[in-house]
Image (cartoon, rainbow, N blue to C red):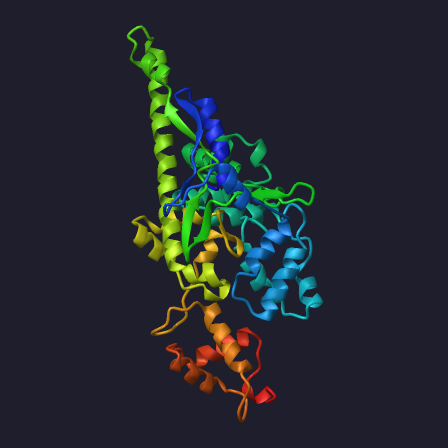
Length: 404
């Protein structure tokens, strides 16, 4: 979970579990041998105050998009209300920008992939289903959650679990677990991004350039250190303690130990992932989005020794502070082009194609075939058809229609 959610979760645990005791000291952990006091660090890296539109546009402009897709997405984002709901019909967007309805629908689905989940929805049901789609749920759990949202959402607050179970032919346990999931979803995902109450996003990872290399910091300085309260440990071992109290304390102790282990595991996973990204995406951190390398979550998982779903959860709703501003962690992961000897992202290849097209022509504008040959000379072995696809995606006409 993100820093802000984790901080609230810690506060809840401290209140509910007597075994957890805050030591009062806070730690700053920067890997790579670099150390700073918390006050100095916060002067250098602060949570960003963003409106909903700014937050979404920052992510939108990191994607590899055609001119038309970019314009359609911006129009969709500009027509979201403060709750994050789309306030304009898709046909109206199509008419305003002289685009096909299918193009608008495609752009909308791409906006749905931005953070926070559930944004740009047109109904409460769609909002919740978009959030469920992001969750790493087993089919046994996702099915009842989806069915309740699709079939019983309007009655959900007023139905008892037994009634829902009977109506949907589900077990009471299934319904109970599904209800817990639904209650954690946000009906208004854009609420925290208002013009009057800007959200302050605390980056979970900070990339700081020092002497030509990037050092990585995980934002643990915002969290307290914990220890097990010795008084309650002593009370648990005291023979005078009643059986009922002892059972209660035993459960709370087990819960506290599990909580501390999960916090450490989260920190270790995020730390390993940060180091992996610093190595894999060093050019992006130095030079900008055009230098994003193809990077898959499965590769990251294999490198740091966890399951792919663990990486997916680790990057969800989390951000990194980079020399180029605040970046969603999921933006570090891009697909590769269909190249034989290249490790470039589609965005980087498109930039090379655009650069070649803008070169002063000696005789006539470069054809797709000649562009393919130039790219092969640079070690990028992609087909002429792929070149044509990328050129069309950038809405650049063929050489026949380009004036020399």
